[in-house]
Image (cartoon, rainbow, N blue to C red; front, top):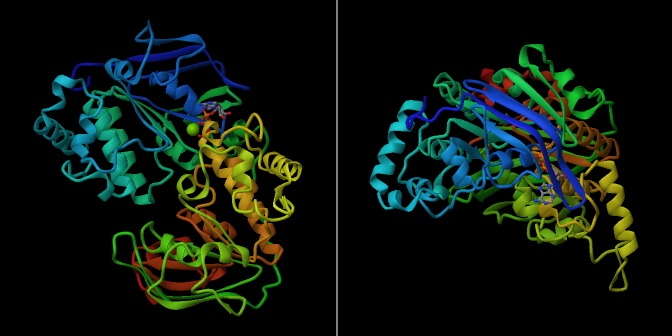
Length: 509
Ligand SMILES: Nc1ncnc2c1ncn2[C@@H]1O[C@H](COP(=O)(O)OP(=O)(O)OP(=O)(O)O)[C@@H](O)[C@H]1O
Ligand SMILES: [Mg+2]
């Protein structure tokens, strides 16, 4: 039973259909959740997971089918309606207002008679955060919080509004491993109270460790619902993708070329105005993948940005192929052969109102073959873009569709396709598989290894240590703005890298 007495013993979705122009997003789908259960929802990018959940939360109306709560048919007309029925949702992309405090954000969307009583909301939040061990200060504005804290705010907000069923749409995509452990503890506490949780993730090991049942979707249909005890990683991957998926790769020896990029004692400020990079020196070679491991916030983003030219440096030099590029603009560096797959792909990598094709040529629209003598070559653009859509299995009705109607993972794939299509001299790949499904992850990993074989120098920044170990030739560990060690992959274990990420000295591990 939750604080305000609401309880959802069973929730059923029956025969649900949802169409968008040119897309059957959800196709006669059945799904159910029981009290106290964590039910995982799995599927490829564009399979229909978010769409299904948005119908449960009242953001979309199903074209067909019904929703039953405790056996009674219910219409959920809006998020307010959903909240009134005890359904809460934390979205794939957070919806908090950065300039408002935690309390003020919680007050948003609460019926107006309560809205003014911020004190009582703050008190309520304090009690809940105590009870669930969700540490957040209700008086801080959102922009001062880390992503993990923002997510705790989203959960607190849903709990405050009395969620008996909580939908979490890819809650762990942006969390550090430590934060994931904390989140899982919170989720268990919630189910102990008889609440239920729908958990969406592309990370199969998480799904296996947290859920009791798993439903797999493919192309809007339910493949199956199985108890987690009967599931394995390869089985789930095959259910999602429809074919076996490879998780380990043969990395053939490549010809490592001479020095491609050199950073010499580079220092730079972080967004918070502190030294985010401290005298970092690093050399990258063609034909080699250097993995950067570290807990998020230890200078990895700043490192990527100073190389791409998107963050000014305070001191030091950056040299690409014997040319000093320290003072060069991002565009000049791009033209010199530096490709950048940014971590914040929605903010830095794409324009939501533009179409798939427009986003695909965003940086190359002034160059052949896309441009001849000042005129766009529309045929060349369409052909190149259609090839990318096919190779990366990007789910979109056409290349003229605005990307805002694509699923989250499919936007990611488009940006990756664009940056990898140029055969760069140097590729910076920041969290390249965050938010993409297992099939696409496999494809992206293969493409990175192909680029390596082609002689590209690759800097792979990832919080996923399995990914770092699967792909890298060398591993650089970052801690508090410094590179604390660069080691050949063969000579370290996952555990040692983990210890260095937590601040242990290289010779102590
Ligand atoms: N508002 C919309 N307008 C048009 N098409 C949409 C809209 N929302 C989703 N779609 C389409 O519906 C399909 C399902 O999308 P959905 O966002 O539910 O996928 P998903 O399973 O959540 O994928 P991901 O893992 O990438 O988040 C996709 O083909 C997507 O392009
Ligand atoms: Mg989604």
